[in-house]
Figure (tube, rainbow, N blue to C red):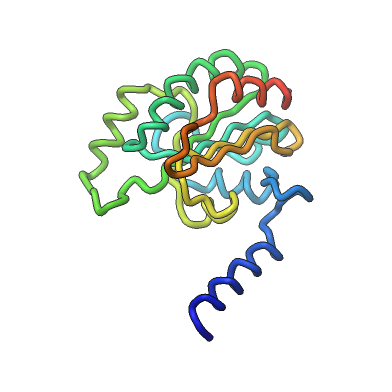
Length: 180
């Protein structure tokens, strides 16, 4: 089997067997996904629990400390958390690709990121299982907002060389409001 055919076959299988997606191909926050988020090692902030996400509007963002668009996003997330947490909104930031390019400083860069942005919401260490569960996350930032029933109100994936590198604060607010 040549490489092109195997690649096409793998892509076809991925399209035929999506992981907990709605009819339109969007990712849905299922009980399994809530449990995966709760199983991830905490980095800072409150411990994530599956029950703590159930029935809430949930923002899930995939980030790395070295990612400039993620810095822009984190500038707004604390304000959103302060405004919406008491109204039933949870934010979970999943750290992925932190060691991309072989950079390993023992977590110093990540700790500096946390000190700079002081997130009040949950930061967890991502792994392959969570990336696969959320549609094979391969780019950051990738941001999801789910309504109280787990249906998506926003899905954003940063595309390389795109002019728009992250959702605007207004877009995230509109998605949260739509989910309340």
